[in-house]
Image 1 (cartoon, helix red, strand yellow):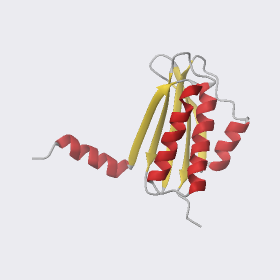
Image 2: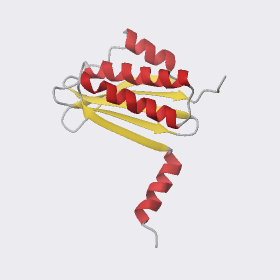
Image 3: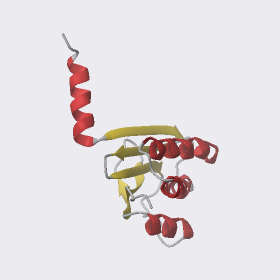
Length: 143
């Protein structure tokens, strides 16, 4: 007899691709861990070295922008949704104000230059609004 939870998880994984989610303290000291996970995600999908570096840089810049706005003692969440053709990334932190993300700095320019698409938004959270950055990177053909 099979466990129905395993069947459901397998069906979801097939439908959505692989999902990796990381939650850490919203502190700059946690960025090396976030970078390591983003590297591991890209390596597991057999991305070339340039694509691995690009994904790591995009995640690092997005998280750095969010950490500048995070509530004290908040959590930084990073979700990677990986399918055969792309990696979609969503990063978010709770924030005190409802101001949109400043999309004029070097960090945002790097993310938008390397990603297939990128956008930021404010979404209602449990207590505070969540500032969200979402982007995706298509799988690149090997040279």
